[in-house]
Amino acid sequence: FDTGLPRAARMRLLLRRGAAEEEEEGEVIDEVAWVTEDEATLGYSVGRPSGDGARTTATAMVPLLSASPGKTNAKALTFGPLGPHWPGENPFLPGGGLRGTREAAFKSNLPLAIVRTEHAIPNDPKTESHLWISGCTEYAASSRRRSGSVDEEEEREREKRSNVKNKANLICTLGDRPAYNGPAGIELRGRSSQRYPKKQYSFEFWDGAGDGIELSPLGLPAEEDFILGAPYVDRSLMRDALAFQMYSDMGRWCPRMQFIELFMMENEGGSLVSVGRHYKGIYVLKEKIKRGSDRVAITKMDPLNQTDVTGGYLLVLSSNSHDSMLNTGEPPKEKVLDEGPARVSYVYPKKPTAPQQSYISAYFKDFQQALWDDGFANPQTGYAKYIDVDSWVDYFLHTEMTKNLDGYISSVYLHKDRGGKLVAGPAWDYNLAFGQATYWNGYYIEPWDFTYIGPNQKSYSQMVHWYYRLLQDPMFTRKVALRYRELRRSVWSDGQVIGYINKYKSLLGQSQGRNFQSWPINQVSTNHKYIPIKHWGNSWEENVQGLQTWLLQRLNWMDEWVPRL
Image (tube, rainbow, N blue to C red; front, side, top):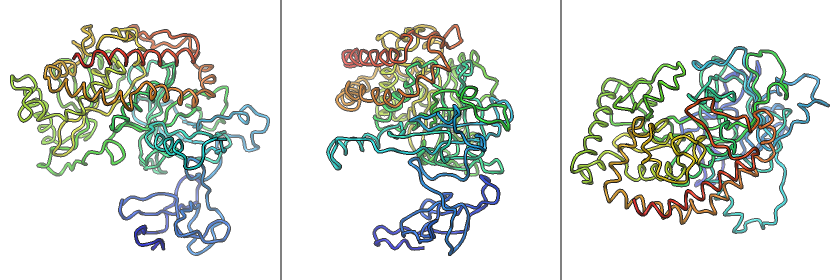
């Protein structure tokens, strides 16, 4: 198939009859295979008849409900601001419509999602659910900007860099055409957060047979696995979003996200959605950290290849003490090493072969030996032989800027590509950062996070010991100081920080009131005696202002003390 575009813009496509989908029985969605990517994109036809009987232009992609070669397709789907609409209407609404009901009046500027399961949602494994996501409509906002103006160009560039992918000017209702309407596997996620009444979930898009399929929810890059994060103890609702954005601004990959409002119909097969009974507040639909071209881009491992074992690896560092204290009953991951307070476990590959295990275990031992050797600062034979130093500088600065008390202890990700060095990151989990925690000096503007000698860092964290040693190298501390100065003059300036917080305030302002009706702000607790949180006030606005004030003061303190490291 030739698109008919000029030679420089041509694409070769393979078009074939689509396979039957399960969204609505008997319907077929055409499939387009992109030769260069060797992956299928569901639900589109290129250059096929549109619903009005006219042929589409060579560049148009029309989603279809059924395959009808050479004929007008009256069931062509429509596009919404968040992508193509899926077949069917909201299955959780009464057949007679919504008029005059509370559900009819429910409107948001955030996409809406409904999850319904016939059983209680377990910690593991995933159980089947039906997932519906609103397609929303977009209205034109008044603007004084000239089209093509410098301000407009700058805003477009900021949106490209933004980790929060919510669109402005959306109206989302329970009667929308769906952006997704089909099966998904879902389970509880988290460790300490499983104690909270507002639960977090992992989910996977499924086909009719229960196998994972890659889809692009709300414009996020296509994948199978996503997270429904629940900002609960974070009463600003934006700590994760802000931390992820500031990490991404360093040029590092970090999960992208969309704020949504969630309705959860757990263990309620066949019932209809009710705002009063099922509304669960503001959630964050975000990417799961995993290997992939649009996630952590490391080489895929071949279990049959017994010799090429240098990568890629995706690993997570946790604390043995935390694991026992916050045990959720989930089976432990395969571990790379279990030394002192630290446990380093495999995220990818999930089931490493014996040669892979031997290689990465030896790599960690060699790194630690080089780090504690007298010649540790030698750039050829010391620690720099084993780690990507710039990434460790960035991770250190970001952890100190956020004062994330788990940043050296739990959910600390590391990865290593084939033939490469050990890279620190991606960043994850900041609900207890930015002065939020009252334990272990977390709410104080000072001192350094890594130097606090309470029961956490010394006895729980191996990474703190690594950073203590790295900071004894004048070359490492010089890199830290230069990088920090660069960031403060650009993406970490006070103006950027205030701009991000104002953006999230505008985005969440309509829905935060509903969220705190479900989860009263003055009743929020971690439900754990060892993890108390700071009281910023009894309103969302006070909590947002507390976050902003704390962060600006923390950066001001670092301005003075980073050069003294």
